[in-house]
Length: 126
Image 1 (tube, one colour):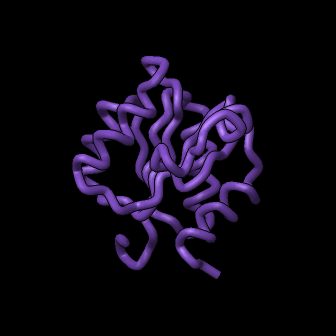
Image 2 (cartoon, rainbow, N blue to C red):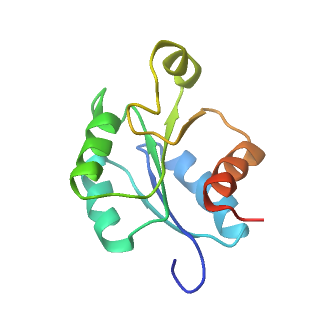
Image 3 (cartoon, rainbow, N blue to C red):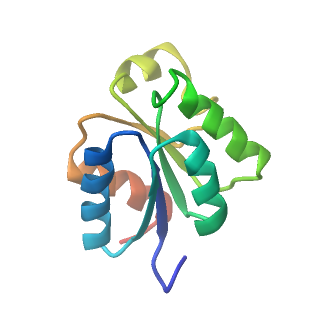
């Protein structure tokens, strides 16, 4: 929490997506931080201590999202992590995303309502 607002960190190399997510979440009263790579995401994570993390599976490297979540675990992360991916449904069908450490998957392009529902369900926000 920051100034009474839940903190969300978005890690994605797509600037347009990060800006869209920022607009949606700030309008809903969230404090939003973002990063364009796994490396900068880890730095931002340490600074902002997010309540929820949104991370793209494929950024600068094919599996950088997976490496990112492994690094978060090593840092003792307790915040729910949602995977943002164009292969979301296929991944859920082929592997157990929860075993991988994700709280859920938001398949791109996702709708505003899907994003807010996912966050609110983990934050118990009404």
